[in-house]
Image (cartoon, rainbow, N blue to C red; front, top):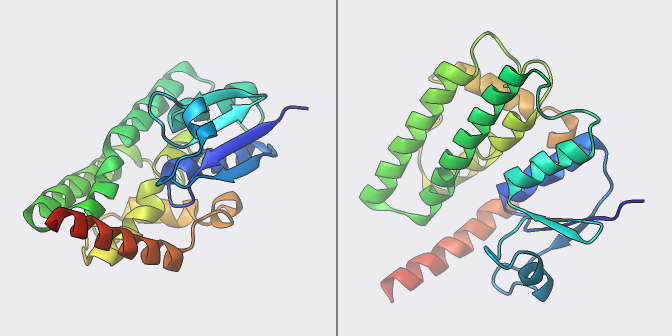
Length: 223
C-alpha cells in the first residue's frame, strides 16, 4: 500500500490545494506541519531548490510545487478526476490554473504592504476579480468546470477564503458581492462542498497569526 506524506503549513493556501485534492481522491496521508521559521532537515532534503512547502512524499519520492503536485495526484489516482478528459476543456482549465498561479501571490502581498504600495496591489487584485467574473464563470456554472469542483476551483482557493480574511485584517474592501455576483456564488458553492468546508483554516486563528506576523514585519521595516 502506498505511503503518502504531506509536508505543509496550516496557514498556506498552497498546502490546502494539496489537502483538498487528496481528500477529493479519498487518499489517506500523514500530515507533517512545518515551522517555516525553522525548517526541518527533511523539508530541506526533499525540496533543496526552493525549500518551500508543500511537499508531497509518495513512497519516499518527493514532489514539490502545489500545481505540479495536483497534476501528479490526478495522474496517479484517476478516480474523481480533477481535470477534464476533453483536450480543449483541459487546455482551458490549465490556462486558468496558470492564471491563478500568476495572480494568487497578490493576495498575500496585500498583507505585506501598506500605504500607496498596498493600494496599488489592491487595484491589481480588483482587476484579477474582474477577469474571473467576466471571463471564467460565464454560462451560469456552479464551479469553474461545471457541476463538480475541479483543479481550477482548488487553484483559486486564495480568492475563496484567504482574500476575505486579509481584507478584514487590513481594513480593505476589494471583493464586494454586488460587484461580483458570479464570483460570490462560486465562493458560496465552493465553501459548501463538504471536503472544502471540513478542511478550512480557522478564521480567528488566521487573524491572530497574521496580526503577530504583521507586527514583526513592520518592526523589521522600521529597524
